[in-house]
Length: 277
Length: 329
Image (cartoon, rainbow over all chains, first blue to last red; front, side, top):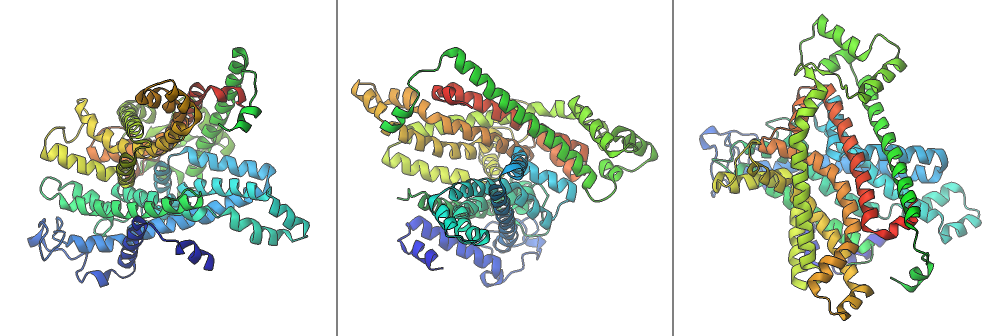
């Protein structure tokens, strides 16, 4: 904990601060959307359909007269939770795979590495589509599909990192002290092997948010009526001629969130690689 | 280049015949790896069908109404009455001959479907690749080591790389098709209908490549050979385009190879946004109708394209950087 605080005690650039503040706002929308708005995201009001923005409906209303601001706020929940869950899945399995491969070496390493190669031969989104083809659309399947598709990235980095840590001087030294294999791995190898993972996961989260929105845009995620950014975009595409704002706002929020996540991830990675300016 | 790396380098330039054989060995190695990946992809597809929950026949029929005739056809096609190992070999044999079975929903051979839909998708992917390459090279060459240019380009790249391609497509559609009426809204009849889809698909990848390219370009511009060129009085534009770009291109080319997979799956969504025909539309329709033979065939095809692309990228890298030829494994 102290290490984390120390790392952030250095003055952060303004862009990173803005990104953090924006993400906190998004997090608030995920946890407690009713604090930000009092309307119901599912309440249809056909009389007031396709209204442009006004004092009453800040971002306008959609084809069924539902308040867009409310739907965008509630929509963050699906988009964010699916992406975060997918990343958590990918980090856990990727780290385990990479660590196991590097520690086991030999045949197992070769097998696991080849398996990871095969997974990455399929483009992320296509792999997710394939998995959904077998399991059917829905939130849980979306999480698993996106998670599996991101496993190779983490597995590769952790494996390479573990290899280089294991051959480094201090681990040799620790081994000569007669530490048990378990202690050696958990106390000395693991922390360094996964040092790069948080920054990588943050950048991966940006990709996952776009992937989530893309898959639900195609109708593979939450089903209609649900307020979800990708789904709202897909519905709004049909009303582009009369009411461009229906498709515009969810896209703006996806993009802003991804920009914020990427800004944070890039800064983190730059710090890690020691080229922060 | 540091003194150390000059000293450790092999002083003797490899003879042409030598590097050609090493190049050949490298390519053969890659091809073997590629075949392994493809074999694994086909095996995974086969396993997927057999491990998926539920009855295989109804899985392969999809949403089509089940009749004894169709059921018999599927059993014969997949050899479901034979032992599993035989089914597997049978499947491998069929895929090797380009036979991906039948789509019972569209009532056509899957290979025929692929053949007709591959063209529009390849056209879109190549156009997007062109967009991203032109964008990346222009931006990187124009802004490397220029203070304000860098800042603006950095912001633009972050924006483009963070924008989902389908939303970019919708924005472009709204501005250029609905409001300005410069380009058609949907379809694939003229070359003009390719412009917006290629832009919306290619710009995001172009932004990612531009960043890597600029970083490498700046590194090249700081290296001693640039100083030598400047001393000779070579112009800045020539230095950037003729000399630094070649040094910087290698990581960007490798990255581009990786990103082609992203372009392919991005095409799935872009085709949907612009109502274009192609593999993407075929895949999404197949997914929604649970038309499994089509989905599997598309997956295997995309693995094939990945293997071909990554092999091409490796060969391209050897062509760009003669130094790799001597030390290729």
